[in-house]
Length: 120
Length: 120
DNA sequence: ACGGTATTTCTAGAATTATCGAAATATAAG
DNA sequence: CTTATATTTCGATAATTCTAGAAATACCGT
Image (cartoon, rainbow over all chains, first blue to last red; front, side, top):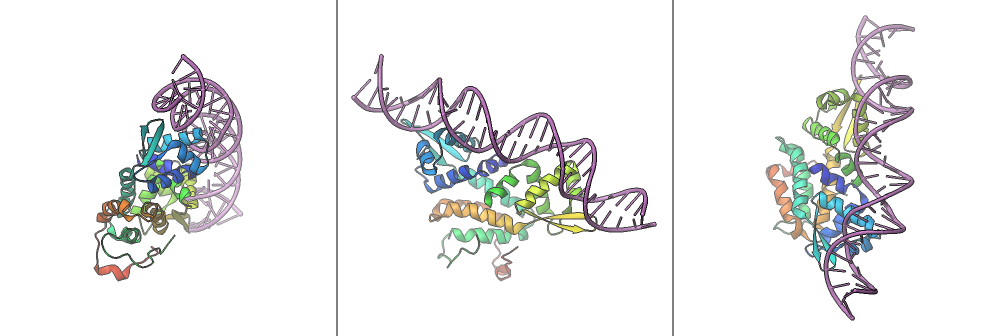
């Protein structure tokens, strides 16, 4: 279902929603607050949240009157892995630079690399 | 334009094209052969290739009568980096597992580090 | 110049998506 | 039970995307 996830993220409002929810991990955010934060009508936002949910990128949990959405990082991870593994399929040399460009953002154990923001 | 790249990959034929072209790096493949390989009419494929091209995910070069397409791995890399960095924004602990799940596909060779071609 | 090959552009119909007002559903509080 | 709050579903419209036949463009060999 990679297609579904990519399609869900290929829309600016939904990409914004996902990025917002990632930043709000692990608490999540209620549907209404997401709509308010991004200045989108509630029903429109509801439709977008349904798409993200269908794609498995967010989960929903009712808490009292609110429905709190959370980013599903494991799903996001599996989508990324699928795409990257395609590059590496039998030919690690092709995407080794890709891995190197991604890795610095998360200093695994060692000291943070100075000015790791080399592109974008 | 991350949206453009995601939208380009969020369609099964185009995702197949991109995966095929990644495997054919660095030689590339002519438009007609791509269409034949995926059993899609040439004009339909041409439209899909145009979308991928507009998204910067593939490049085209005329060679005699053929137009040879190649995957643009640096563009792909920057899209991936953008998405992953969103996760890591100020909170590396969130997507450290993501990095770990991706990295193993490319054996981390410490020896060749100096050779890194950061733009490929 | 001509004929053949490779690819794109034009065009159009079908399908899907985005948007949002209005109505409906679910929960909580008084 | 009634009212208020939070969210979704319904319905309708505008816009975009997918698909492919037909025509056009670009290149090559003779």
